[in-house]
Image (cartoon, rainbow, N blue to C red):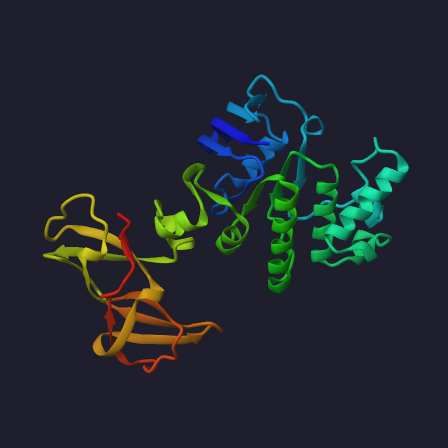
Length: 343
């Protein structure tokens, strides 16, 4: 089932939260909504779920109007599942009873079969008789996901669903969740503030900044062609550097970057000030130069060098063990840099 927002705007006490959002999610697609705190991510989910009334715009499911400022069916009248960050399990009910919560219209045998199937699907069959307070955060998340999927919703909304799990478990949970959701062909909208999670989970990513939809596309598109500084910094891993144009180069505190490496849509005049984004993994250093190595960190699959020049800092990432040391004077090589103009 497809979801479409048309010209959606929302405010709280006169403070705008969402601005003219136009967004369409295809049937069976997993879309992650990414953005900093206060960008309007959770408000968007609450509007779809029916927990917030639409103030301006329309919400369509499969091309049919579901809600607008005059029409707002309650959550129970929408075929939409919702998993919150804190899971909201019923503490007085067992795991099985929690999963069975929305299945009251089923016959007893059918309900028991559905519960058993859902628990097996998320790998927690042995926990059926346990109570929520005896479970880990990751186990509670699986119960919440099983409960949401048990009713076979047309749309599933996930609000920071893996936040309570530690890093190794979070990776396992999101891989498992994506596999289950794609198998069920469930249209999914997931809120996250973690760009790595969005890249791992999403077919497409919708980026919200200060209530504006600044970019919507596949992880590959956002990585290769960021259209906003937030996307450039958080998804494309581009570092912002200030520079000025001099002939065929952009002059920065760390050295010269050839303009041929930038996609130019207009002629840049000499001495024009610009901000460029450069990818740390495409830079190298050599001994001698105007820059100083401030720190070297080993991150498992790579080394990160922190280099300074003229009160600015630049990260350089390499899979090879650096031959330079902290406090060495170095030159930064931009010859093979992946870079773009940010402003």
